[in-house]
Length: 171
Image (cartoon, rainbow, N blue to C red; front, top):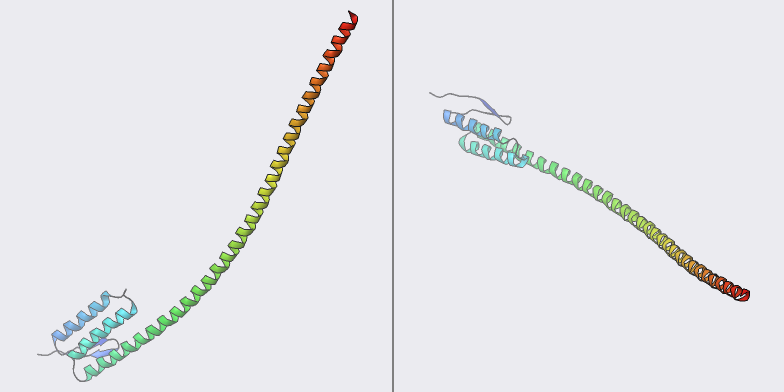
């Protein structure tokens, strides 16, 4: 006793002639459901392989339908490749745009670093000048104090001499 079922696979109707064909067909569908997360090309290759297997199992009109399905899968693979190429071109454009942005940011950063470096060098020179002036002022103050001490010492000596002369004159 033979049963005929109509199965719909990738837009094509199949008429498996035995339970074995039906089991194989459902097994292929189950395998295809297991791989939805795979890349499009891998999925299309698996679908093409499954259809090639079915093509060997069917005859007549069914075999032609499977061949048409294989052609459709191959056309989808071409479209996917073209889509991927378009996406790659867009990605390349985005990368170039990002690269130009990063180059400009790098140049701006270099300018900023050079400006800050110039500013820092000027500040360092100003600080050195202040330190030198401060050192000179300290040296001058030290010299003035030494001069004052020397002058005071001379005055003390002169006072002592005057006292001593006065004491000698009064005696």
